[in-house]
Image 1: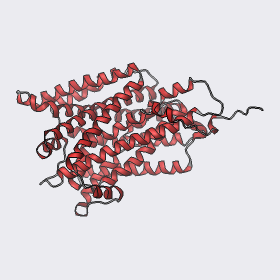
Image 2: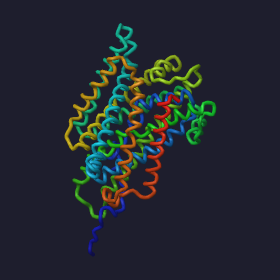
Image 3: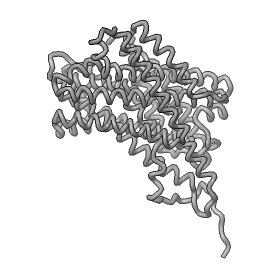
Image 4: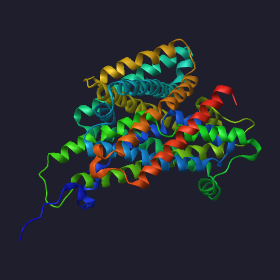
Length: 438
């Protein structure tokens, strides 16, 4: 019988359950951006001011995140190039430079915010002791920032032992954050029926419609972070290189198989981040909603949890924030390296990238600027930069010349542009509200 060679793109994927665990990792690294210190502040404010009412925002945000992150991974798996590299290959030179500038601005804002978040987490843990021994708040924050910098260097060094070691390290941080909030939920005893209702039924507070809309827009508008859209297309490359080095098997498509595994990776990781974010709102809704005034800051939440739920609760909150800051800071540095190397076609040390981004954060802390205000400012910057990551991603994944038979279907195209339209519109609304102080 004559063997008929079938093109790789037309093969039906083969699902092997014993292989799937080897593909878990990239989406978990990307998911860190969805549980970063900025999410802590937003979710705490939402739960403190409006109880369970805004849980539905997280559900819809998660659905959008799954689509966007999968498209980024798909672009990387199919083409063998990152999103910045594909922009350089398929767009004009002026457009590439413009997109690089926008991406670099978002990466710098991310680096600064996440590093400050890690420093704030350390400050909440060691600050009371150091302040009691005569240290100033600024001196304590600078010390916390330096310790955070050393730890981020250590985490980045895991990559020298292999990409899977770095992924495992990040996944461990995500697990600690999840366990910390599991502990908080155990302490507060939430009303699960009410939480489920507000997760499934979109509502705003009729007594404070504008206020609840503002918080909802803030939660949804900052859902997809531009730096992990760039990064996810790079995180899948090591496994893709391993696949193409393996001998070809007639009747078997490795890329399609990888795409299916990565879809599962994205689904599990993004839903894990969604559960952690939901736990933040539930904890704040139960612990803070009945206080005389809402808790709207990270430090305020930490100081309030101790008297309400005990010292262990406040400690776990600080540990979760520290893990969030360290892991998201690491991911931010990785994204910055992918951006500069991809758009400019140069080699850039990730350790040098980390060293450079430490300097502005230390300056911000040393001059006594409020880290929380810097976190808010970074979210505004990221809102401006977001369309310059999402639009090129959709343009590229919709092009047959780029994706071949892996080009997005009409249904995926429509869903993608709807998601981008919603996110961009809400970001514009959010920026308008911030600008006019409404």
